[in-house]
Length: 227
Image (cartoon, rainbow, N blue to C red; front, side, top):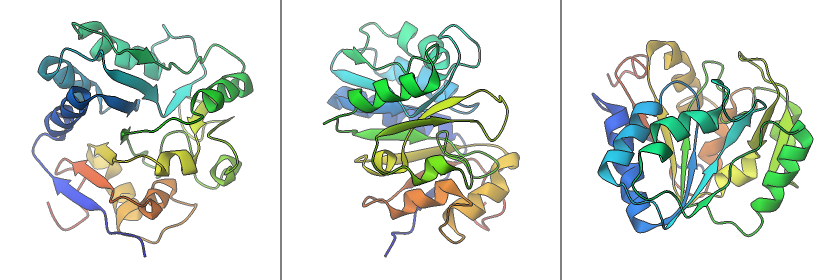
């Protein structure tokens, strides 16, 4: 049976998640970052609290197929808010090369992930229930024989994406969502309270062998009845 998610409604989820990321960086291991609009402040806080990331292996759960200096790049977000602020950068950085052809970038990520252990996976939630770049009802959700895949986006920005597959995401030792804003409130209910299914990809993380941790502000949690 799936474990119920650990829903944590807090005043400042970015602060809480920033501390959590910094604690993991201090223990070394592998950290998987996310993109989107919510995590930048968490990354800044993590860099303040733990400036030495030399023992860390850094990954991204997904990437937009754009160059690394493009404002839509998940890598650029993490570089400007986290990596460039560190006194000691991560020992290994596995950037998804969005400037390549999508299938080539996905193949490169798939190979890099061979034998990798993911200690902390950070995720966001789309208003349509997507997670990483796994969108509702798409063929990418069914990929189980590879660690990474590519495909079109379901929401803006409408550029091709490279993403870890669902089995890879569920393999992480710790799975943490950071979700803010009232625009995510319906998706929160569907992902963490509703039925598990392909129409809400984030709900599929509840099938992982570890309990999913969800950090929410009160706006994002407003339809849970816990705000």
